[in-house]
Image (tube, rainbow, N blue to C red):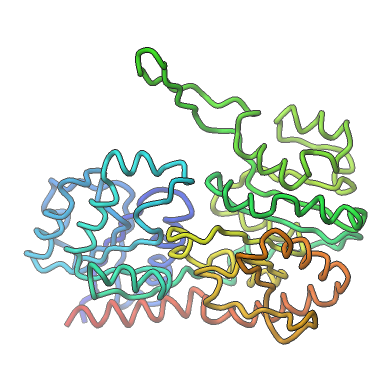
Length: 404
């Protein structure tokens, strides 16, 4: 039996490629070496036709190469020589106005070009049934292959050390300021029990650029961002009540924006955790007990994956999340009339954002055993459904069905 040759084109070296392209296809090759040969490429030459002819399946994320204009026609060419073309997408094609990249997408009509790719591809893979239903407006052949975790990967097996305090953490990227604003005031409301709490923001980063526009000429210039301008400072202000909960000496240290050792940082009320590479970032879940997942209720967020749920679950963390979109798929609220039930998370309804983040943190601080209980229940929810071996088995069946 001849092997099925698969080309998986990784869009970048970030978490998107890890979860949507690289890990799934490495696992496919490793689990089914006699039936599949997988190549993973980060850069492809669409003019070298002989390169493409050896594959039966081509999997890409959003676009093949950098040229959105020519991609639909290239997809049609691949189909004309008998190749099955699978497009993967994990984010809605048009972010809302709060997202820093929205203007670039609108100016370059990238959202329209992504939809054009969706329309001509043979199949689309995506993360959730919620997003799949949106994609089906343009292409009926949508397969849900969720983000998944290899339970043996080291970064998902870091031990959580004991602490006298309950540690509350958030882990994410630089485009979530409007989501984190849902937590504004939470730390202040919890000040009566601050001696029992410690906050973590994970992913802190000072890299980036600022675009400045000359008001007279309209000329745009870019310069490196200064550390104090980074959005992460705004994140910290939310988690420190504008730095009121930390000591002056520690604030002075944070203002140096240097990643280094600070003595007795575990005694501070807040800990800054710097960004980590994609192959080790998840270790940061081991630093806290309660994971927060706030998201605003709009179409971009409703179409997102439930990766925060999956990651927290594999780490057996108590999760407090917005009752929105992807977090409604697997989560069951664990309180009924103030009493704990058999749920696996605490869900904050949109009209209670002003009160319930603090209320639920306090509930868990007052009932620390329940932190362990709902963490264990969340693990039981995700451990099989989002196990990379299970999802790869489903991918195997899908790919096999395409080649007769």
